[in-house]
Length: 266
Image (cartoon, rainbow, N blue to C red; front, side, top):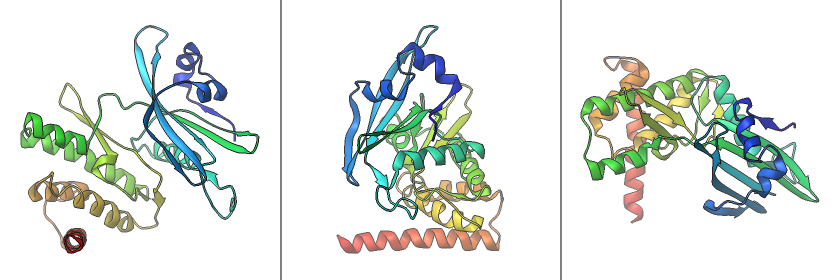
């Protein structure tokens, strides 16, 4: 597979001496989080600040891995680099106009017997996960409901677009949904961590899983009223019809069972 280099980033990487696989692999940078040591190898993420040719700075997340793959029928022994799967999913989301990470570079190499891969993505400047956003409200105060609803509307539109293309995220948790509130009050939403994304033939198959994930892990952060409003916004309805009621009961019922099971384990 040929290297991918985002045309918009070509001059920036060249300006920083990072226009090749080897240069990116050798770039010294502190780990953003401890490297993942499993699957017979390792995988790590670093944040790198870069200088812009015209002045100023920007940042990318540089992911590097060695012998860190997922086995498949076509690759039963060595497996496929997990970053290759992530890169393919990022590109699939972007083809469907679903807001996600912007890829900067992707490449793979064999170094002796070792399989290496690099995936670089643009930093989501100004964005915060729904998790961190709510934690921030604990310090600064909860914003007016209209502002909260604009956030929920942006996330609902994002999820609706995914499902319209038959994409199920698989772990649509608040920590994987990022939002940015712009100066004019508008809200942008993006989704990350696409490793478990799958295509599904029916939209309801996407909805049951992703709506449950978001609802269950948002119960302590968002009121039931706000979550029902989000649900109606996602479905594009003012009142819950028979299908909407069934879907809500399925999602809410699964969340309740999960909560009871966790309480029983304590």
